[in-house]
Structures are given as structure tokens and as C-alpha cells.
Image (cartoon, rainbow, N blue to C red):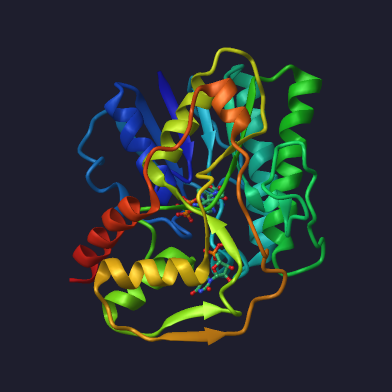
Length: 310
Ligand code: NAD
Ligand code: UDP
């Protein structure tokens, strides 16, 4: 198959491209390099079945493909809040453009949605039936609400145009090729530990997240795309192992052997207090569950950043 991946030069997109090429598919990666980089896919550029296009998904795209993964969007709070209007445009106008393409071609399209659609959740762990608690006018809204509208568009194209859609709600994912300056907690802590700088814990560090290794996520995304049961989702993809930021910091310090101190900073506005996926649906519908424990995945990620930071 010829597969289009928007956001293909990003962290997740580069791993997905690599895996699909390895399975014998042709891949067209589309990216405007806002947060992604050519370095992420430099090993793929020599492959004749890989094609890279500089393109902004807020503009229409005309290509001929057999399936679409829509991943284009900054994912870290620092980056998606840098130009919030562009974040909303990328997710909403981008979804309209890609859905239009999928409709013309009559091909399946997968949306990389997010656990942020649950906002600061009052239900824990979060099942797909939970509608979420999102502040529509806060600093995270450009991402959370745009991802929610994108889900609405996907389901309306499904109902109105009988489009074959698949919606994955991705929970915090980490691994090699996260950007060092990304601002997400895993990359921040590892880079800080390796540089001997203080680990910056926002708030008291009691807030929780559940971290999924990127290889596991990629398996889940492909399982969802290849699923033949015609289930549009949404389906949570994440690792239910739940950790406080204090626990994460001490694990990073232990594995790196760093003696960096911990420094507390102000908690950002609307920072969710807890987050853990209920993955019963993914297990039942896709036969998928993550297999890489945090300690092991952190080891791989730390090795990657060591090689990058020299
Ligand atoms: P990333 O920032 O590394 O990758 C996103 C890619 O999209 C980048 O290469 C960026 O340049 C590109 N992009 C941004 N705006 C674009 C535009 N207008 N046109 C074309 N390309 C554009 O982030 P990631 O972690 O790889 O996330 C990939 C997708 O998964 C995103 O949609 C994100 O919302 C979603 N997601 C990720 C996580 C996570 O923890 N990594 C969690 C939930 C959802
Ligand atoms: N966080 C932190 N220190 C950092 C970066 C993030 O304590 O240097 C916290 C942040 O406040 C949040 C959690 O770690 O509670 C996860 O943040 P991230 O930006 O990785 O993802 P998200 O908030 O989108 O889940």
C-alpha cells in the first residue's frame, strides 16, 4: 500500500514511517517542520519507497494514496501554546483537508487524537465513554478543543459520507527522537539529568501521567488501521502504568546515575492532576496492549539522548 503520514517527520511519525516501510509499504511523509525535523527521518531518505513532502496541512493536499494517518500537530504544551491560533488551524483545517482527501479517494483515515480530550478528568482511569472536562478558554484549549473538533469532524464524515475512519486517543508517549527542547516531562527530565542541571518539577509533583513507549504506540496505531471490524473508535492507546512526576524524576535520576537536584516551579494553568488510560477496548477490539515497562523504555530513551547530547 502507499500510505500518507502527516506529521511524518515528527517523533511518532518518524517511528511509524520506519515501521510501515519495514512492512513493505510505500510511505509519503508530509511535514512543515514546525516541531519535526529532517534528522528524524534521515535514515529513511535513501529508501526509494519513502517520499518526503514539505507541506502545511492547513492547505489542501493532492496525492494518491491507499490510507492516511493524520498526525500533523505540535504535541507538547510549550509548542502548541507558542502559536495557539495556528495549533487550532492545523488540527481543524488540517482535519478538513485530510478528510476531504480521504473522501475523494475513498480510503481509510486514522486520526491521532489525544487523552487531552478528557481535560482534567473527574473519572479515573479514563474510559472512551467519558466526555471529559476541558476549559474551553484556557491556554490548553487551542490543542484540547481543536482535537475535540477534529474528532467531531471525523465522526461527521463517517456518519454523513460513510467514510472509513479510525480515531486513536493517544496518552503520553515517549522514546527516542523526542526533541530535546520539546518541553515534555520525559525529555526535560532526561536532558536535565544528563546535563547535571536541576530537574524541574512543576507544582508539588503529585500529579500523575501514564507513559507509553513509542514502539508500543506504533503497534497500536497500525493495529487500529488494519482492524477489519469497521470500528471507528475512539480507542485509547496508552500504557496504564501510572506515575507521579516525583516518581518519574527519581527513576530518571536512578537510571542516569545523575546527582542533579530537584527544583520546584509553578504548576502551569489547567495542568491535569491525574491521567491513566482504561485500555479494555483496545485489548478487546485490537488484541493490543503495551509491553514495554517504563524502566526499560526510559533506558532506551536515555541512551538516545546520551548519543545526541554527546
Ligand atoms: P511532534 O511535534 O514530534 O510531531 C508532530 C509533527 O507534525 C511535527 O513533525 C510537526 O512539524 C508536524 N506539523 C505540525 N503542524 C503541521 C502543519 N500545519 N502541517 C504539516 N505538519 C505539521 O509530536 P508527536 O509526539 O510525534 O505527535 C504526533 C501526533 O500524535 C500529534 O497529532 C499529537 O497531537 C498526537 N499525540 C501525541 C502524544 C504524545 O505523547 N507524543 C500524545 C497524544 C497525542
Ligand atoms: N512537567 C514537570 N516538569 C517539566 C515538564 C512537565 O513537572 O519539566 C509536568 C507537567 O506540569 C505535567 C506533566 O509533567 O503535569 C506532564 O507534562 P507534559 O508536558 O509532558 O505532558 P502533558 O501535560 O500534556 O500530559
